[in-house]
Length: 290
Image: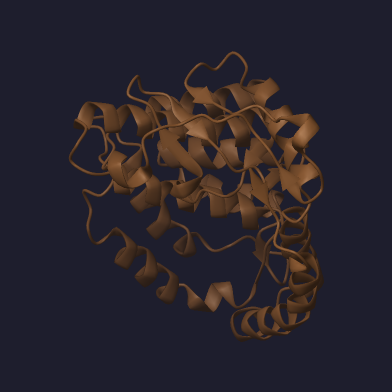
């Protein structure tokens, strides 16, 4: 049972005014992007989390989408005990993230959990266009048969039609090392320089190299094996600073990329190894052919 603190909705709405000022100032330091669409995306997703009837609707819709995916467990909503400020679901207990990421369970099982999380992410983005957008590992629990329980659906992103194909194209270009295709894919999805030109190839190649490693064939990638990966990502961002300050990007990517980045961290905590290339290619190719 999730019960909203009294007056928290009024407090959040008041704090949004201060948050808007802060976010606008921070963005102005790094980019000339139009601020209002970015702010609307952030504001709308935050306000949605205050309405538990909206979350209950998300749960029901997600349950229907994953009804035949036995690896994902979604607790059912108890309608008669749910309202705008109270959400009641059936009790489904599982292994906590801290236990799952510890030494109690074997690596084979952690690998399986990681693969289920990756599949959940890819299905939401590329197949259903209805993406669980709060990847905090505390929103998940785990079962000893390899299944994963998903608890929190306050933040769910509706992926605009066509954007799933753009992400599928990015994944395929990365998997096949086709760097020259990526700037045009990014431009078509709304990510380009302020003058309308595509992002320069040198701004793409460092990321292609790093994420291409995740999709290598043999041996399969183990999340966490490259202890310097986050430093390499930071260094790539710093070296491409001149592009980011002069670049436009669609507001819809904010929560999509948040979900992907969060699950990257989740798989790293699990130390998961898996057939990531096969998984990504299967979902990406299906999205482009659908």
